[in-house]
Length: 359
Image 1 (cartoon, rainbow, N blue to C red):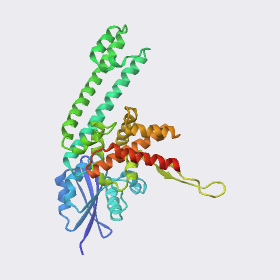
Image 2 (image 1 turned 60 degrees about the vertical axis):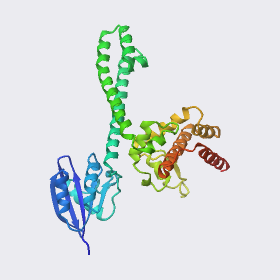
Image 3 (image 1 turned 135 degrees about the horizontal axis):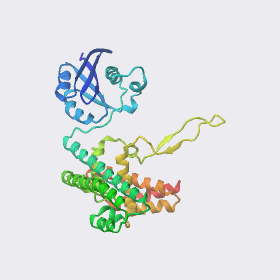
Image 4 (image 1 turned 90 degrees about the vertical axis):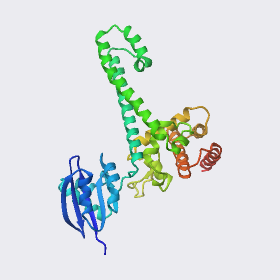
């Protein structure tokens, strides 16, 4: 009979605590540097089936891509669901690694998906860096506007973003101290704006090899950044068995909740609401795409939105419905490696609307 080892790893930047469980007992503990050779040396010393678990974190993807071929199974655990580690008894590195091994043996860990493709991982890093630089640029713009409001001024949009308009606006400014403060803040904005442009150039170069990104750009509201963001964060269309799971993961699906009873002891009616535990980057991308499609000139998604609003659906619900439909179309194109067929989608949306009205 083949021996199975359950290995829990509590990973930190400098060291990793490993606990190895065999037949319900911890048989060994190791404290090793957080390097691939050091951890791999421990794994290679075990003869038999090896199941490894560690928690999601900044180094999780790097560890997965370098270790998953050395073991039979890798679980990257969602720390929000590991309540046993968070709340039961003492908490330290050795206890955490042992509890991870125990949870792994009992199949109680909820896995977080990671890609094993190094090139896609690098593209994802560039996408994340781009969004980070854009957020910082927006923060700097808000600081500049807030600084002007402190002096009762409203700065024009062009003056914030473009140096030529900026110098003209500053020349008319009578407040020397405010001028010095704004010049200092503009140094930060110009740096982050330049970094955003550099990161976007990397996205353009690295995304050229993926045909589905080019296909998605045909859709209303979907440009290079949104299509690349959705591609790298979803990684594969086969992660989700049903479109409802995809919707919820991207923050536009609905989940049914019910709790308690009324005064007569009857169960309270279920409520539909948006889930809170979602991927915010994906939610911003797909909702932004839906809003852009709705605001563009006539297209199938705008028509679908306008029909729903005319039928009495509130605008926020209609926007989420457009986002779900847009996400479903992209999912289908990805699975079939097909192109966007607007005529076919029009027929489907007309059927959907008619069915909703009949109910």
